Image 1 (cartoon, one colour):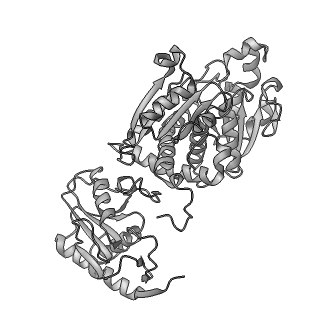
Image 2: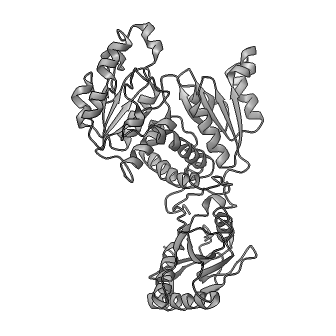
Length: 314
Length: 178
């Protein structure tokens, strides 16, 4: 496994391996001095062609805790504004000696394109509507941790609610939850579902809310309003938001998750601080540990030598 | 399939660990500030076993584990797959830490474990207990407590558990760095 571009591409065994490695990294993060020399001498370049706070900072923190050197490239202050092509940008940065690129780009498929231009490892930090594999891994890790599971998520009932069609988080999360054996239901208006839904779908949140272990709310992207895919945000909230009434119908043990940034008053109509099952802050915390696991696995761990069999590994 | 040669049986392992437990107590003049840390992964059972023996002889001591994989000097030369986590039961500041491992070979794992221990505090002293010392040191590291000195060739592989110690021999393949 040289790259992490999508969950589908790496398969369930690698997912479980990365989640186990995340346990390890979480222990490092609990120390007074959460830093280890594991990736000394490695250089990681963050290339962000789209706005991001948590993903970019989370990758930067992860790289620093493993003692790697980090370069962060944001498109606003770069030669991309002078008309430099993506390929020239990649080749220029790669010539400085980079072991891994973390790439976020508004166009789907860019991580695959870029991996043809460089020998470095590519980590997808979000491409268009397509994939966001590290978000999926941190969500799977958070569910596993909060429900006290080891290994997979067999039989865990997860409802993913919101704009499934335009969400790379939804796509990658459904892939990872299903790869781990969870039972996923999509909840969305028909206009916000992809033509071929990856899981059973309904447009009635009230039918499923009391029969789930995890409620995963997606961010309602306000720009979708211009496309008239939902009549109004208020209409959307009435049918798909977590309201106080729906929160009371959630099973006591159920988790409430959100990838952020949250639209209070749109998909989230209760204060998550008052929800006992809300694990939104843990998602962010776990994001650092998951990204440490991904960087370590690709650059120094099992992923750095795919040919070794289990017996040969130390 | 390479040939396995039994070096110690389960009774030998039991007698060796009992003796090592007595030596640890004798050397340290008691139990004050003593902590046993098994080096992940092979040293964990042995630290537990030594802890049980010490509890039987005098009273229980804290037993934990230390993972050294992130501090290895061969990261990048071969894939490193961390297998167990560090579990540090008490503060290591001013403690006497006994690092415990099953097989001492090049000494590189112990060096990494010393760095890992330093992340948790500043022990008064660090000692090293191993069930088998097989030689071939590449660093200036010497055990304080040894179950058995076992001359080996670099191509042999030594496995140690509570059930016994075996040598598998000499096909010149992957070298254990335990």
